[in-house]
Length: 384
Ligand code: GLN
Image 1 (cartoon, helix red, strand yellow):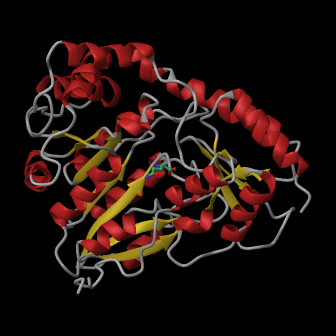
Image 2: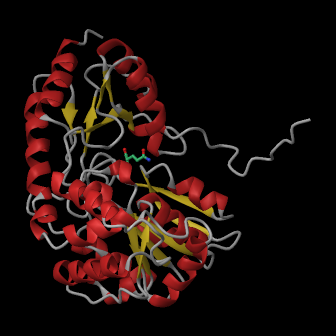
């Protein structure tokens, strides 16, 4: 008899990104759902990986990541956020940003600890908390501007609160934290046992002249933070699954205890390649301008449809209201759009534990112009 499992995640299904990408393949629809670029990544970075493999860099590197890569990251952080982080003790290379978030939560949570998060929230956060015996405390962002209600946060903080998950630029809304948000956060965590898990994977994808307010900029916030980053988002190679986490030494030591017996260490040739490529600042500093142009182009095209844009100041996502087209629930609408119009988006309701219906769908605009044009042509023609 096959042994049965008492699920650790009884309420968790398959991630919406896999569900919608599978539907896209099944219906040969244009995939503006899952966040990944459809244009090629930089050939130079590919060559660097090839060179590393050819040159024999194919064995394990240090458990925390290739030392020279951690040094390059530390230099980048110094240039961008004017702070020094110790590459030997405060940076760990991870297989992606989601893994970094999971590992940070695993390192800090004891059963019954509460973690505050803001909905809409990236869909890994709640299962990551629950599998570690934590209790998610969900606070809605305001609609339609997706801002944090700090009074609500204050009222939900209590002695069991162990962490607050912050995500700026925000997936799915593209909202970004302001200096006022930072002051409020500071006030709330001061003298507490609260950690900040800061999901900053879209750090460079920030528009309209806004600055990315990384937790790394503020020593009093960084001292209690795990800051999570993604190379996939920065270098258009989401399938490489490479990222890193930055945290103060004592917090990072606990993170590494978990990491070393899970992933142990990441893909070596890619780390050699990234270390060399990070010296080219232009490759990441140009990202905001490039994606802002895509956001604006998509926005211009979408004006021909009955979708209306909600503001997006960062990430490579834009939320659109379909209230002028249909009142149906977001998940139903997204499925119908796939099947009948041949365009995939992600229902915003997938970012909430209890489905809401604001008639909002998320589109990813990190696509070739021709892809965006073809998608919008299809959206213009929908007749429901
Ligand atoms: N971060 C990506 C998104 O929001 C998806 C990553 C994934 O599929 N796990 O679309």
